[in-house]
Length: 359
Image (tube, rainbow, N blue to C red):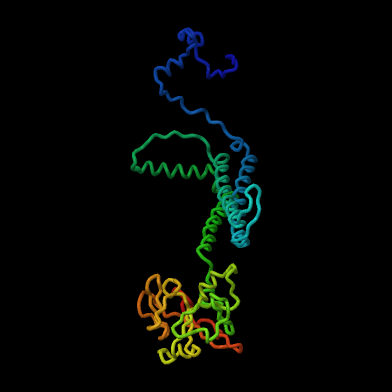
């Protein structure tokens, strides 16, 4: 590059003198740097952007920022729609990821898009419309003096004016919309804390006319199959071990059946709901829902192995020891025309661990 190509203001004041003083091509500037290696060169001259001198370019940038914020709003709406539309177990093939959960894939992309477009809009706004002039400010003590506070407020007002936040209503309104909708993603995710119970915790598969099926033989139970002192586990007719909802349903409908001499039954309702001394109670402990399987023939007590809650099956399955707060629910049973044991309805109260809506 020749000296003619260098701006005049950047040339040494006396080129000949500078060359002569340097000896081997050094300059006066180089000498000054050698003397002070931490010399402050100062800030370069500020160059205005196209948006600073052309209002049409500024409006294009404004529309671009608004577009980013609008895309963020649409992504948030898509997030909520995907959460409602896709079932948890739906799988789809997406190249190159392979088979993935449609719900997780859509939630990840839509939430990522909502956050990305807010960031992209804010960055584009700052780089094209807000003031980009660098200002040097001296360090000051930690405590803020009245003068500093006044300066901060003045700078804030100036920044507000330079950003056009008050004048550019399109950017402001779309940004407010994007920021207001994004938190809805967190509210929607609260839905995954658990399914809404509705009446699912109050009802089981037991209903009038459903036969009691032996869980070991998968055959209908008859009164003669139940002997005094024996403990038999049963499930509702129609429930299959290989069904996809077996664990969920058996967790509420699991039944234990014992035969007690009618004279030994102390609770009047228990006797009315039994058949020839055969009583059916829920197998699920009312403390935290553990399965009960320990039976004492002589005392008619059943023991939960988890926390030792003990129930008296001869007295309405009331709690006689342990942390359980409620007796075991009883299922009213009878015999159908074929001579098989059947339910005469569902349990009269929710099964398993107590909850705040227990009736």
